[in-house]
Image: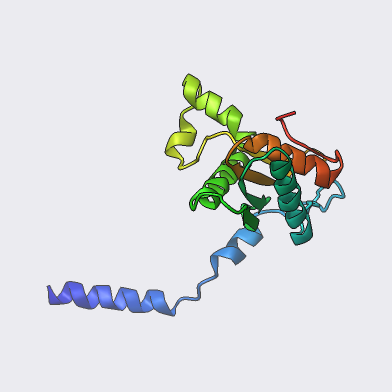
Length: 181
């Protein structure tokens, strides 16, 4: 038993004394470099909803709701799902901003109005939103500019998608689209 330990200790000592090349250096030597091409696009330009744009969406949605004698709450997300703006009109239920936020996240993830996601779930066509912690209830729209999803707007209460569409139309002057049209 002692001999085995001594031999294994000697082998380990020898192995530790050998020079070792880092894995990245080995890979760099074994893989030929690709020629640089001008066709490769390493970055892309994305549009981002500004704070002022999000506030304008909230104001436009509130104006539409007041005009239609409705009380709503809303949440506006950027393309990454970050909350930029939220607002609840006076008299909105306590959970309405949370509901609007859940709707907006669902519209952003599925890149479609939550009314469409709701129909998919109800018909049994796609049940994924129910176990992915989404909230497939009507009331939210993705915001698309030049074919690019730049965010989403969720509205809790009354005609949420109509309110969101009116706000998107007012703020983006027909530059933005959603599949609710």
